[in-house]
Image (tube, rainbow, N blue to C red; front, side):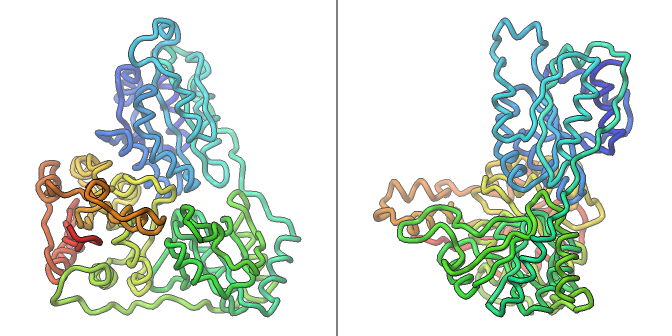
Amino acid sequence: MNGAEALLRTLLDAGVEVCFTNPGTSEMHFVAALDRVPGMRCVLGLFEGVVTGAADGYARIARKPAATLLHLGPGLGNGLANLHNARKGEVAMLNVVGDHATWHLQYDTPLTSDVAGVAAPMSHWVHSSSSSEEVAEDAARGLAVALSAPGQVATLILPANVSWSETASGPAPLPLPVPPAPVDTTAVDAAAQALSAGEPAMILLGGHVSDRQLELAGKIAARTGCRLAVDTFPARIARGAGHAACEKIPYLAEFALDHLKNVRRMVLVGTRPPASFFAYPGLPGEMAHPDCATTLLASPADDREDALWRLADALGALATEPQRDVFSPPALPETGPNTTATVADTVAALLPEGAIVADEGITCGMEVFGRVAQARAHEWIVETGGSIGWGLPAATGAAVAAPDRKVVCLEGDGSAMYTIQALWTMAREKLDVTVVLFANRDYAILQLEFQRVGASGMGERARNMMHIGNPDIDFVALAGSMGVPAERAEDAAAFSRAFAAAMAERGPRLIEVTMGSLLPR
């Protein structure tokens, strides 16, 4: 058994069943081990950002980590943007990054780089294995870090000679991950007092919001009369019929300030006080009212379900019925242009039970989250770190994790081009993903931000930096070239027909939704 086989057996013994890969020469012995060690599903991505984003989406839905296999420092560097999103989203992930043989580094050949230095900013743990005798134990330690609360990114560097050298040690057992910590009784008491103070109050949930967390928070909200909200970018949350109803903090600072202006007590669960995404002239960074007192019930690394149960018990809310979302599908639009409202209504009406929505709709997707509260029960995952190019890969990983559930990806045309290669992986793996691609031929979010930060009048050069037409990208042809059937919906009725057909069929599909531009051309 060589080091690569010992590493692979260690991952399989610990329950890691999927590896998203983009290998190179240094990783060939790991690749060869895949034929000798059965059980690992390897999914090829044609760009490392697809690989890391898919591992993120997989982990959020599977509730366990995937591994990635990346090639040297440049390959890892290509995947860093979605590792940033994973880190911000508290996602459990183990990256295996190949490197030159230890004795070959002295020659400083073209692909030689500081792999650990590249990994460090986006990893909670970085380690380079020094021998085949140690690599299995190193992998087990890295996986334990990844599985430690609240979910972390671990990176194991695998020199080529460590991979190919023989070992007598075999696979290693998994050390115990660090579990969520119980919150102190004083935190529960302080939260109970805040919600019983007779002032307008809110519970704010963040990160991976489990069904149990949402249910308990809904009971508390119904008992105390407080509002229940989630972060602007929750890593995962259940939505739709039967689930406890909740708000979402708006993305735009002006809207968030208005949304929170009456809240005077805020209890935080797995999150921080809401803050503006960017700094804006004349606007505060903190979104809560200056007179709002915040109370931390549980940090991301704490046992949030236990904390909410204890809080509900302290408030006498365990038997209280939450306010719930109800399935009340809107009428499908029959005429008119595509708007964010018509797209949202169509999705809300037709989304199947148990579906997964991966949201990177940017400006065009902002309205969908609120409207799908009236949809059938489903699950929502959101880009947590703001680094675009996450949606298509995350939907890919989610579909690998849940092959029996429909995945819908809300995607902007600008962000899609960062990781468009994910379509090829969807086709190759025959994944049940429907991509709703909002085509306004613009970086519309940048046009909006240009105005909000108080930049001077937009001239032709500035406008060109935020417009992705001339030439227009033909996403129908692009998807078809990668094996994904696609069509263009020019109006609301056409989108309703296309989306209904996609929900009734299995397999990858893309619908290019023609949208209007924010600015005249």
